[in-house]
Length: 194
Image 1: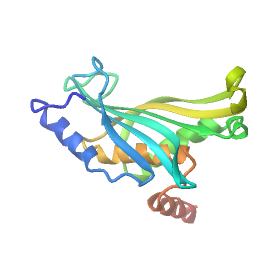
Image 2 (image 1 turned 90 degrees about the vertical axis):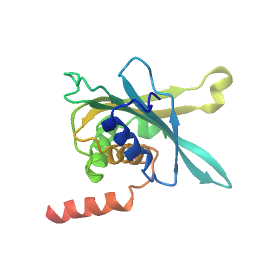
Image 3 (image 1 turned 180 degrees about the vertical axis):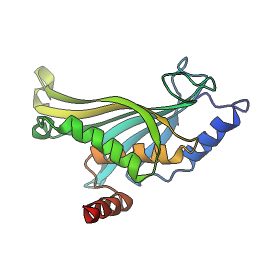
């Protein structure tokens, strides 16, 4: 994390906005060291989706959210801020075979940003399906699958709480949790409009 007293006011406001987010209760979020050398200022979060199962918690997904800030506004960013996000969740092997899974994962990111009214531009990313089979000592693990989404986008304002909240919602959706009430009501309104 490269936040300090000498950071520009705009970056400090953005970090404060992220720090004020009340993430879903299934999401355990913590501040982590951000990568160095990518931007003059950065702030990073890591999160795990933990769901209570039979009196213990089980991890159902993990992710990272990195806010980059460069007051020189790199041309490829189109502004001073850039968000880099990662979300990963295990899947049942048959779901991992779905040819539309990558498209669905990307659409969930777009929907999560829209639901949180997080304005952005210049999005890019990849959605990856990983299929695995255990051998040797891992043979008992059997077949498995994962979905990974790596994305970046340029926020349209320094209000970053909605950006981080959308990432948290995406992570929970990839882990198989239903969308929150805000997302459900937005989907219902879209259906009503036809």
